Length: 453
Image (cartoon, rainbow, N blue to C red; front, side, top):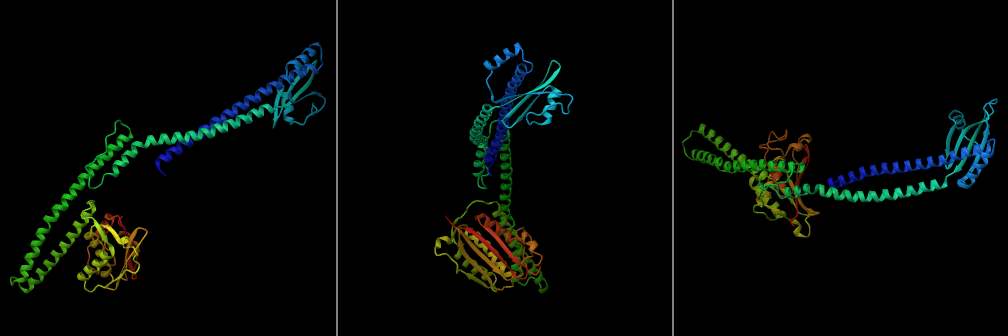
C-alpha cells in the first residue's frame, strides 16, 4: 500500500471517529433536551391535576380554566390520584402497573420520572389538609420521537456526505503533502553508476524533506568517491599487476627452454610458472568480479541469440576440458526465433555461462552434462544439469559469496570466484539465477534472461 493511500485512509479514519462522536453528542443532547422539556410539561400538569382534583375550591376552578384554555392535551394523556393510607403496607395502591421503586421515590423525594418506550410518567407527592396524595400524569410524545427520527436521518446523511468530502480532502491533502517525496523519487531513479555526479535539487526550508535531500546528496557524494576509488584501483591493478606476472611467466619459460637450470631446479621453475599462471587467472577473475560489480555502462551492448551462444560455450568448454561431455537440448525452442534474443555483452554472458558449465563438468568427474534452452513468458531459460557431487543443503545459500567453496570440494581445484562473477554478470543483464542441488545426486542451475524488446 502506497504512503499516499495510508495517509488518506488515516485521515478518513480520524475524521470518521470525530464525526461519530460529534453526531452522537448532538443526538444525545437534543434527545435529552426533548425529554427534559416533555417531563417539565408533564410535571406542570401534575401540579394542575393536584390543584383541581384534591379538595377543589374556587381557585381550582380558575386552574381548571387555565388548564383547558392554555395547555394543549397531550397524546394519551391520563391523570391518576392515589390517596396514601399509612395504616396499610404498602401505604399506596397501584392504579397503574409501574415499578415499586417509582412510588417509593415519590414518597421519599416528593417527585419522580419514569419512561417506558414512548410512554412518559411524572409523579408528585402532595399534602392537603394533613392527608397525602400521589398524583401521576402519563402521556405519549409522538412528535418528539418523530423529531428525533428526522434528526437521526439528517445526521446520517450529513455523516455520509462528510465522509465522502473527507476522503476527497484526504486525497488532495496527501497528494500535495507527498509531492516533494515523489520529486525526490523521480530524481533518484535517474541516478545510476553512470551519473553519480548528479545531485538532488536543494529544497528551501528546514523541514524533514530538506533534511532528506541533504542526506541523499551526502550519500551520493560518498558513493561517487567510493566508485571512483574502486574504478581507479581496477584500472591501475589491471596494468600494474599483470606486467610483473607476465615478466615472471616469460622469464621462467626462458629458463625452462635453456639449460640454465639443473633437473632438480627445473621442477621448482615449473612450480613457479604454474603458480604464476594460477595467480594470473585469479587476478583476471578478481578484476572481472570488481568490474561487473561497479560498471553499469552498457558497453558493446548488442542483441545475442542465446542458443548460438550456448553452442559457442560448449565448444570453448571442450577446448579447455577435452574430457567433458556436454549434451545440448534444443527440443523445446520456440517457433518464433525472436524469442531467443536477449540484449547484453556477448563476452560477459559467454564467460558467465562457461563458468557454470565448467563447474558442472568438473564436479561431476566429466559425466554427461545437460544444457537445455527454452523460452516462455518473455524469458529465456538456460538449464545446466549434472550428476555430480552436489552441494550440501546448508551451504547452498553461500555459493555466490566470493571465495566460498563447499565442504565437499576439497579434491577439486578452484578459487571460489567463478559463481560470484557469474551472478554479477547475470544481474548486470537484468537476469536471475536459481539453483537446486542434492548431495551425490547432482545440481541444476537455471539462468533466466529477459527477451530483447
